[in-house]
Image (tube, rainbow, N blue to C red; front, side, top):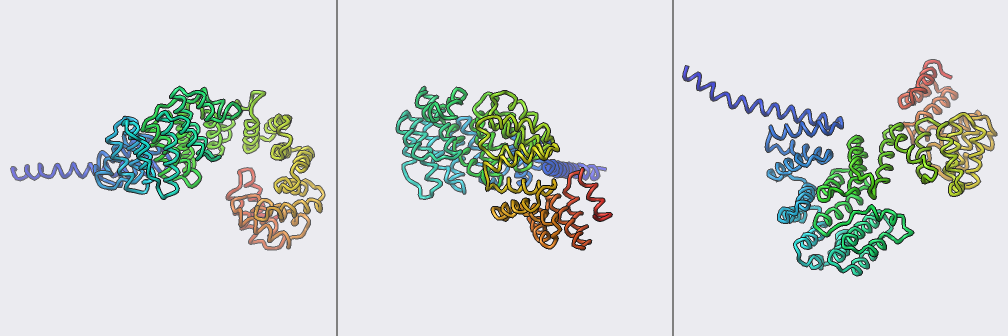
Length: 527
């Protein structure tokens, strides 16, 4: 009995470890599933459990770190980074996240350690300007840190921008403004730098210089001045400016972990940085994390500098996933006032048209066209024509298209719509063909125009001329159901019945519900 008891006692801890490992594994696998499904909050909860049950597991920690970045769970972020650092497996961007928190807490020892890690990796270009901001916070000579001119052009640019802001931070306002103007371009990065400088100037009580930095009374930015939060020079401020600067540069490419890490690091350094929120929301939305992106935008100050931009971002994200009714619910109130901006009316009209509500879109475009500024542009006339055509009034739509053509006689989109409309609605086909030939010559790689020209030849009975055009259009745009159906019709007319049914089936896969029955009839019975 004694031996048996000792055996049971010895086996019990091993059994406990096995169950712990198993529960950690299950939590990790469940978290990966939640992650794949886009369920960020539940994934974070499960990753936290998996990390607790399998301490030291760098694979679990890395996935926990990435998901915590997406969701914004600071506690899990720090736990995951600590685990990865202990294993020597921390990714380069983890130092950004740690630095953001250290800068916010004014923990210069932790901040310098994070900067040292950045200096030893691919983000070395950030090291010198960050060290300069840390020196400024310590009360030392920040400009001396940037005295050496780096060879790398990107590093040199960041150093020059940081030096200009640091001159302002040190009270050398005219020198700082002059240095900044020397490096400003005409892009979004220049706007961000102007705003950063104006915040520092406002924080120093230099209101006149701050307003001038935003471009003077006539500048669109000047109207935002009263909403602009003042800033005091600090490592947190400087780090946030740098992180946003790089995140903005990366925003032009494919979103990835670095974009998200930079935006999150900026928010950890400066939680009120709404520009970082916009960049983070953009990256998340392009990774199909729609709900998480919208949640990030909810944190933007409703009365702040970026409130209108956040509304535009919400609308774009919702429209991108075809949640048109939700997007319209945001856009409609913005377009309601009589003095609503042109862009608010155009956005609402475009959303209503995309939501297949053309009769509601038409009066919105009409409001826009009744403004003197809109009548000289062809785009609203084209959209107005589309809403009239969608509402069943082709004659009025054609009149609107002719108005668009008078403004832009060589615009391929206008020529295409006018030619295709005439073919479809029984107009003068030879004239329509001439319009489509012209549109195709102007834009030969446009699948929609190639399809229109092929369809026009088909409608004249010239299947031999139509087929190569329709085949080229279908190859260029395989997810366009209308083009696929046109190709199937042309194959059938040419006696190529097998290929016709194949083309119709391909079109049926991507067609809207209202078109699938018609395609099914064609597949079963032919033309």
